[in-house]
Image 1: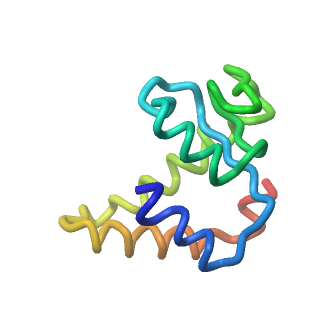
Image 2: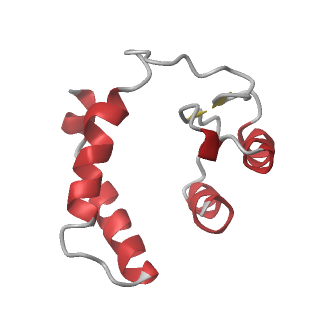
Image 3: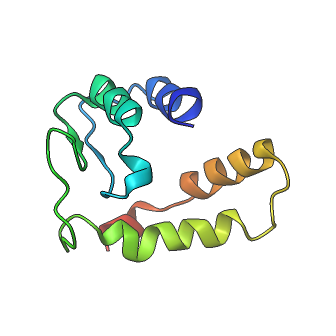
Length: 105
């Protein structure tokens, strides 16, 4: 997912100097994953075993966990996508429709 979708999408949008944050879940911190993320984001990686350690239960860094991801997941899976293409289309549509006002809140 990271190699085949996420990084190419970042490149398509010309995103540079982006910080990447993930929690310290074991499934997110495999050596190969951390190495790939370090290669991609350099010192702008906030993660367990990354250059910037993820501070657990930090209210300043985890508002996405409390609202946005739940909101996105609810809309992405609303029509029960049955194929990867359908799921990807839903993700793109939902993310594209998030208004800046929502993110400011």
